[in-house]
Length: 320
Image (cartoon, rainbow, N blue to C red):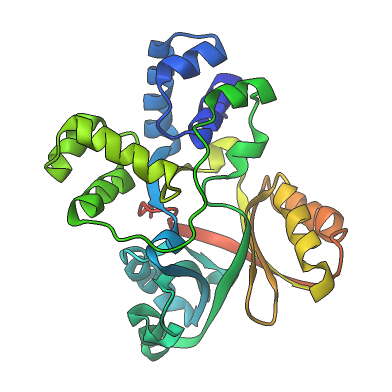
């Protein structure tokens, strides 16, 4: 289990993935060397990674929640293959081993069936059913995670760590080859130093620093923290599909986003209008959550639950 200092550091990194350890140390009342040692230990023992990510709409992409049902003996191989695809994230086996759930990015200006991955999946041997649900509105996720709302930092401490507010993205941007090289390096290590980023792009460190600041202030790049939930005592994860009366969808989504258990919540297309990814301590805690906070959401008509059995990829890194 993690102590208060570990949790404070993780919350700080979720607020700003590239925050200086010296500032984190000041906020938490320890030295920057202590913070650096804790971060190294969390990387080694809890699978913590700070990853740079691109806002999908900033580059003309649309996010889909995809459910792939297959024969159980094919699930592991297919999940591994999906995890290797650059357009996927959060690849996991659920529902007793007969279903794979993942997030897929596809061009926003083309029908879903024109996506190479989405069009190929239904024709994959041993796949019995595929459904793709377009994310219409994200209530929680992206640059925010359970670390954001469940950490020990006070409002004053969080305010000291907040990066400058990014401008809202209004239309897709064109990125250069060097931009893509920079983003690829950040996707592997969001805290990579300017020297290594300069080597990846062929730019000077000054130019890298300036361009990264532009991409962040323009709302194109954000940072997320990948972590193993087990050290947090979160050993039961599940996907939820909620059918909600249309008039209550916004209120239900906003209430769901505030739940400590929720790591992602979005309105989607499909028979169920609201999708969420949740983390609980165990199956008893999941039952209490479903029969308590979820049942109290406004307008909920039904809930489908798919417990996660094995995660192959989180925000970007293959983990299994």
